[in-house]
Image: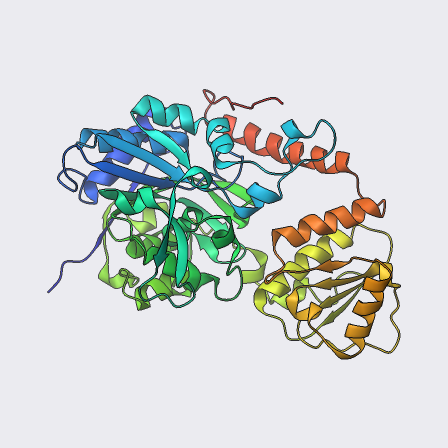
Length: 460
């Protein structure tokens, strides 16, 4: 009979100083089997943390956790340690960068800039490692054996060639996948095109398929400060968990971490269920050995995104008095994107018509004019009949209100903000101010946990 996979849990109360965090990481790793003898002496180890956006924990993994893992790897005999990450699509293309915005709202942060800003670069180098942004890494084309949603991608060669591969996810909820833990964290290894693709109802399978390229040899989860609510970005809220977890089985770790987050049945998490089904690890909590602290000792019921706690239509249809929504057959992600677009339009005093999905039914006459008519997503843009005529007329008159994409993801929200700026309903200064507000919230929040942290912001 095969041995049960082990998942270690190490909990400590706040406040947590750097030596205590290092001790927690060391204990969790040892309880899960340790790193000694796992790779050849003098070998190369690649480490993939979660650095989602230009904000410290709980949005991104704590730099002290990353540095602790680097030190452990060096102690185990690695001669080279590379911490590689690719920030989110939203960070690359949508988030306003105040330092670049002296002459108007400029968007985007590179992974290298985020690593430096959060102190990750300094912490990793002091621990004996190096950092690398996925944008700057050499890629090779990889065919994914057994891939269902993904079949061929550009993937960092350095991860494929490494002797050992360690994953360091954060403990967060997520509006599109319920939670984001170890399985989802490898999304950041794909290039920008690969990261954008499949943010649809095949997203969970997409995440699992990435892990089929190279499954992590070891996973260390940063659950010191978790994120709940409308994560994994600015909409979430910090929760003190004080937890470090580790396992050689990434699916088992996600399974137990979900239970620590208050999810009774971990198989409701799509990435865990599918990864278990596809044979990447064990997603059955009854077949997993938990060592160290128990689930009961650390469990907190984190607030899930609202689209996982009530019907999605309840935040889309019949909500905003200034929006006439015409929605046909649309996948869940387009419903979620509709909710995001409506939330933005709800702040505008004028009335809008929003067209979404396959073959939505529209009345003979709109209540809004064409300047206030918005097409959201590729299905709406491909609609025929009366909608095609409306679309043609808008194009002939030079009225570009087409938010394309499948799904209509971050680029659609950027374009919507540009449209509202052009209509005088939004200003670039408001976008800059909002970005600074988000920064202040997360910077100030994290400093209450780590007074030694100072962001390394480059002024332009």
